[in-house]
Length: 116
Image 1 (tube, one colour):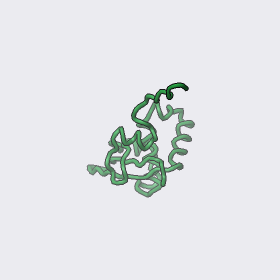
Image 2 (image 1 turned 60 degrees about the vertical axis):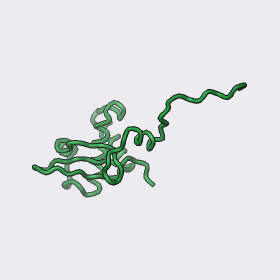
Image 3 (image 1 turned 90 degrees about the horizontal axis):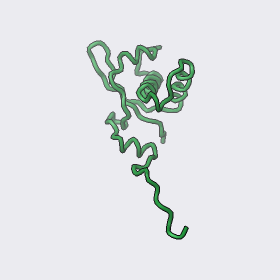
Image 4 (image 1 turned 180 degrees about the vertical axis):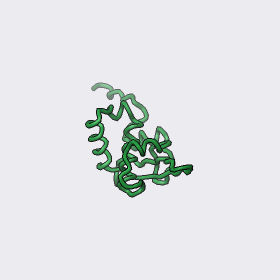
């Protein structure tokens, strides 16, 4: 099973809005890394919306959900919203996102056992 995020993007085309959900993979992560390096964009933790939007754009393009050769800037101009979701397009809660990322909800570590 792929652990890369599933993303839903709400796209504007003329007067229509459409939510499209897509599974991302390594190809999308690499595309982000290459674009970020070439364009001098910030790292993921400093620009999470940019990261998520690029992943959505590249994954949707590879899946054939975008017009052929649609550039990122055009996609970004018509992308009204982008969010982490399940495969049905339901937005993940912060706790679900942490769980999928393998982050425990309680950041404190247990104390060592007595006598150690």
